[in-house]
Amino acid sequence: MAVIFLDTSAVVKRYAAEPGSQRVRDLTAGADSHISHVTVVEYVAAVCRQGRSGRLTDDEVSAAIRVFRADAEAGYDLLGVTTGVISIAAVPAERHAVPGYDAVRIASALSVQEVLASEPVKLVTADRQMCDVALAEGMSVIDPTDAAA
Image (tube, rainbow, N blue to C red; front, side):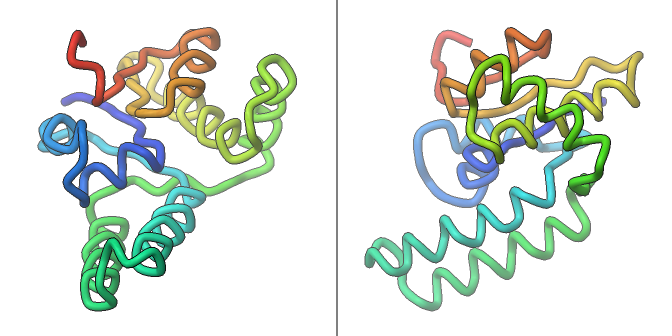
């Protein structure tokens, strides 16, 4: 079974029709999917921003959050922001000057890789900087918007 770690950009694509959405849905079908607790907050914030901008109705916002929360409880392995994750996150933050939450998500993915040493963990992100940093940190990366991949 494939092991993937999704950042917020990939999670949003799973629930909203945008470039790369079908690829994320295909990747998550039958995969061992991991996300950070940080992603829960960021997803809700992203959907609410779409509601405030008029891109989604209030009912669509509520439905998107409800479906995601149900999946977050049952379909994802949620990783907490532990002291160990924070220690790991400081490394890419210092080396690459990435935003704090990006460093936390990269550290979370690295933590999954460390625990599942025999299974390759692929970070799924549409964020170019996260792709570059994760690659520099030795991770396998999938950009769902990259048609060449």
